Length: 403
View 1: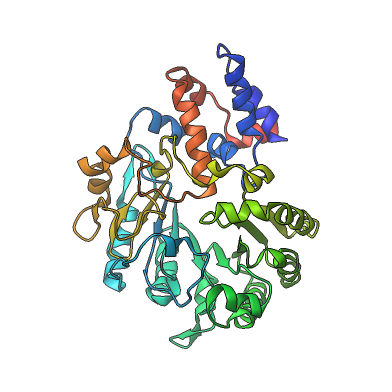
View 2: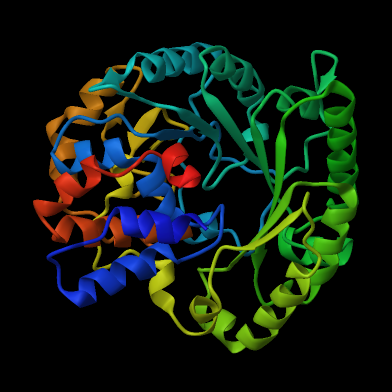
C-alpha cells in the first residue's frame, strides 16, 4: 500500500522512462521486513542525502564481534570459507566499555549510531560472556540491541542466571537453527544440539511471556543441500513454539548446488509460507529468480559500496572494519578503537581511500540487504545532482502511510 504513494511522491520527472521504470521496480521489491529500498527512502532519506553530499555520517548500525572462536563447526557457515587464521580475541570488560564510549560519543551532522549488533563471522558471541554484559551496557545508552547466536549455549549460566535470561533485555534475538531434526543438526554442525537448542528457545519464550519483555525472536535458516528437505517441518515447529519469524536464505557459498535443487527449495518455501499467521512471519530473503538462476544477488561486484555508510564492524581484535563480512585475517582494518576515537578512524585517510575501491577482492560474500542497498544507492547516485532535491522533498514515513 505504501509503495505506490511513495513512488508518486518521488516521481522522477525529467528522467528517461527506463529510469522511472527501474525506480518503480526497486520500490516493488520484497515484502517487509525485506523491502530494503523502501526502507531507505522512508527511514533514511536525510542520511542518504548527507552521504551523497559527502558529509561525515556515523554508521546507522555497528556490529561488534566479541569472539572469533565458535562452539560449533557448521559446514555451511560462510566464515569457514573466509579464513585459515582467526583474528585474535581481545574484548573484555575494559575493552567493551571503551568501545561503548566511542560508539556513544560519535555524533556528527545530526546523526549517531542507533543500532548495536552482537554477532560473529567466524565466532559465536556466547563464547565470550562479555557479550551478555554488553546487552545491558548498550541498552543503558539508548541503543537498539540485536543479538545473534547459534543458540547452543543459551542454557549455560553466569552469576546464577542462564545466558538466555540476559538476552531477554535485548530488542531482537537472531538465532541460526538451520534444520528441523537432531540428525540434520549433527550433519550440519558436527555434534548434537538440536533438542538442547529447542528447549532453550521454548524456555526463553516462556520467560518472555512471564516477564512481559518485548524481545523479538527471529529464527534463521540457511538452506543448503543437506537441510532443504526440512524447511516445512522446521517452520511448523517454530510456529508452534510461538517465535515471531523464521527467515530463510540460501547458502551463498554454494550457488551451483543451490541452483541444482532450486525447484525443490522454492516449492518447499511456498508450502512453508502457507504456515504464516498474523503473529508468525515466514520470510525468504531471496526471490524465486535469485534462488533459481541469478548469482548477482550473492555479490556486490559492479556496484559501488554504499552499505559501508550504514554498517560498520568492530572485530574481536577491537579493530574497525567496513562490515561484518570483512572481519577476517587477510583484510586490513581501518585502525584500533582502543587507540583511536571512532571519529578519527571513520575520517582517516586509510578509510577514505578505501571508499572508492569497495567492493574489492576481499568482498567474497555480500548479505541480501547489502547487495540491494548498494544496487539502489548506486542507481540513485548515478542520477547525479537532481536526486538531491528529490530526496529533500520526500515525505516522512508517517505522512506517507497516512496518504
